[in-house]
Image (cartoon, rainbow, N blue to C red):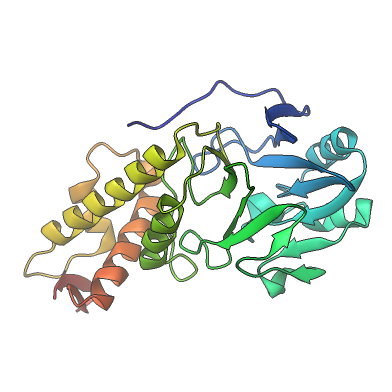
Length: 267
C-alpha cells in the first residue's frame, strides 16, 4: 500500500466523483492541503448540500454557487480554516442553514454522532480535530474529510488533535464495510479499508519508533523528529513535531512515557 497522487485539478469547475457527488477544488495548494481543499456538492431532492465551503476565497465561492445552483444546506466536517474560512460568505450568499458538530461555529443545527442529514449519517471521528465528523451514505460512500486522505497521513496536533482518539476513529471506520472514501484533500480512495489499515499501521510503526528513540536523557519532539524522520524536508518539521507530541501524550497516558526536565523519557 502507498500514498495516492493526482495531477493538478482544473479550478472553478465541478467534476463527478460518484453518483450524486461532485467536487470543486479550491485554489489553496500547500504542504498541508495538497492541490487544495475539496468542496463537495451532494445532490438531494431539495437541492444541493455543500460540504466544506473551503477557504475564504471569492473566486472559489463564486464557482461553488455557479455549479451548485440551489443550495439547500451547508455541511461542515470540522472547523479548520481551510475548510470553513469561506463559511460566513457562503452562508450570507445563500441563506442556507449550516450543520456542524462544533457549536462554536454558530451552526443553525448542531449535529451529533449517528444523526442523519440529507441521507448522510454523521460519524464523529475525533483525532485530527476534536470536532471532526465524516458522513456515510448507505451505499458505502464516506466523505472522510481530513480523517483519512489518500495523498498523506493526517496531522494530529494537540490539544485539538488527539492521537489516541485518532487510532480509535480509524478503527471505527475499519469495522465498517465501505467501498469508497472521498477525502477533504486529494483523490478518491477506491480501497478504503486497505488504505485506512495502511494509515493505522503507519501510525503504530511511528509510535514504536518514538518509543524506541526515547533514552535515559530527556528528548524533545524536535530532537525526536531529527532522529526518526530521515530526509524530511525542513518545512515539514513543524507538522512532524506536532505528530510526535501527539504520540508522546498518548504514550504518557498509557504509562509508557514521562515528561521530565523539558523533554520526554520512557515511562
